[in-house]
Length: 361
Image (cartoon, rainbow, N blue to C red; front, side, top):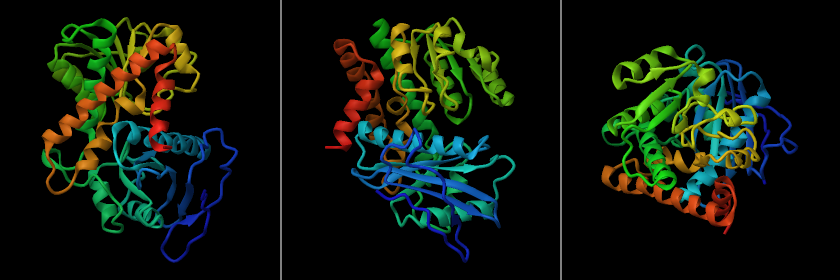
């Protein structure tokens, strides 16, 4: 186990200590490091959860966290989820994640990105960075000028952006959940409430619209909502109401912890299938969903499309091969649903068990 807090000078970020081993989200992470760079304003954390299957791959999230502890909680949970995600997606890689504390619309600069790249480079390949909320392909290209441990730079028509694959994988998983819960193959007339209309949520809305679904959408960024209204005939609703609408599917596609003791009793949908990470505020919230008769698609299973796409990026990228791998998301979810039904356990418990059997074997 390596929790690294070493200090570095002369152009590299300084690593600063922070309580970690007693943190409730610490899960035998192999390495956690904190970086501060005064010149660029970088404040960042990288967490490597597990590398038994291969090098840790995980996106870089930039967000104006309310506190350092909130950022630490997020990166610990996200990195753990990446380990489980890679295992159930059948990928030869481990799980890691990074977060930058700051507003991506206001605080992101080339100097900050290059300082982050130096931080990534200090891991000597144990962690490979990719885009996530608040960062994009161009940011990864900037970092690639400093470190070679960057992924998600180029692939097919979408030029390295994994969002289309994440949205498609979520659509495939949602379709599998509808098939399992309702025995229907088509989605025409299906009522779906999408929380988050960013790169993934808006693309999911487009796929659902093409399939004939009826949509309700919300997002903190109002222009994103308006685009879904204009393009897909979606109905705009306030953020605080989206989870409680009388629909068939609730699809969280923004930030995590939206499924909690307050929101779950208000959910009227029979299926929760969305692309957001860490949707459960607490592990026991999966039991509450089950008690309420709600079929939950474990987030790290249904949203694995992006990391699958990144795995294949590079020379010889073949969209047909990627699509076949994405279709396995629906198959994996169906096995989880069946085992949960037959064993009287939650889908989250079954998914965790299946993943740990793979990466701890």
